[in-house]
Length: 564
Ligand code: 4UW
Image (cartoon, rainbow, N blue to C red; front, side, top):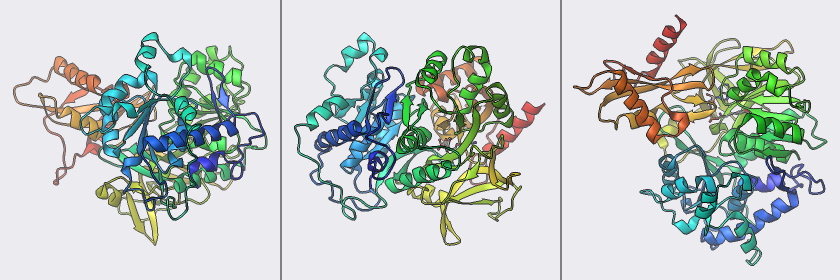
């Protein structure tokens, strides 16, 4: 069944239409629709979306992994809002696929994703409308203006200018209204329009190397992960009474998309949605809605640790757990948070887009600070050394994952698929590109520790940045002959990109040139991709005989230098 049915239909989950707690609540206005209302909005909007996508028969040609149906991809480029998931469910209802894009992207970055996923329709929100229209109009993107729609957001987020520019654009609410006058959508039929391989989301991740790639996540992959998380959580969480959890992290990112905005509503809880982080509104929201579970990333934990005096002014006694993931949480910070806020349990999760999110997380009954927790039920893991040989407990190696939540693969990228999804010992394994160690806790459970990243990825406040993307952009600068980008540690964001640059002949390696190169990135890329780690000029980029950049050498050199 489609993931939306699984989450919202009480026959499968615990979302209870008789209880008043809505699955999605706006953390600014307190507004939210009940389960029954959300299900009805999905159904009505689906009728209108069927027309927009020009789907004559939703069960035609729907078999297989969806590779043949790219005309049905809908881009979603919006800040967090209560209709984000209902929109995705409405698209899925007519056999469409949604491609969530980071709201921090600029028009060029969005255009890359829309072009690559062959999106034909785009949903955005008023503050992002200008960039959305630019992207829809970009070379190779085929989204006419009438196929750009708005997701409703709270009034307080509109400026007068935004309101003026948004005039004439239809909203998700308009589609729900229109749906009332349209014919019901026929049911999706198993084996015809719908199958185990049916893709629900095309999310973007750079994986172990190269540029961001479309990750094909099926309904089945995602439902699997929701069930794994809930079954594991039952050992330490009580799901009999609905509770409210913080949904601040971007809904476009896999962590928020699956864990916060689907798993929690599936369990009957409310995801209380905030569109952006701002300390006072974050704390007001926790206090006002008596949130019990905060889903965060390590940089937000640092803000909480550094602002105890401000936090003490709010009643945060409702918080039972703080969950963090998407980037390493140090043992020191985990312990410090536990000392500062002893009634909150600090737990950590680990996973990736390619595993439909969660591989493991800490249970509330066996907390080991610095560990990413225990492997979820239904997931098999191996740790292998550089020669691909399995290693035992307490030994580092790359983590391989095999399970039904491991995604179908990358869109149109055989090379990346062959490198990332390998078949060994009769099973299909995902190469995570993460260096991990499995250790046994005193309670006898196997815990996973992420010790390093073997892949090229840079993580900034949990967001992915692909070195190859920044290198490609830097090479377009007239003064740059060659370059390599690596992560350097940063207290606030975890990591920042740093560029090593070889200049073209005749250009001086000066402070001005470095500033010019930094500006070149700042002017053309979203904020989190800026070269906060600086620029260093070198004579040659270290490369393997086949021409592959040896980023690892640069990273090791940088680490040695920072140790001194
Ligand atoms: N420690 C160290 C970690 C950790 C980590 C992820 O953007 P993606 O593709 O996906 C994510 C997913 C985050 C996530 C998964 C499950 C979960 O329970 C949770 O928190 C509750 C969050 O970020 O990036 C995937 C890459 O991010 C790094 C690692 O390199 C991984 O391959 N990463 N979690 N706890 N590193």
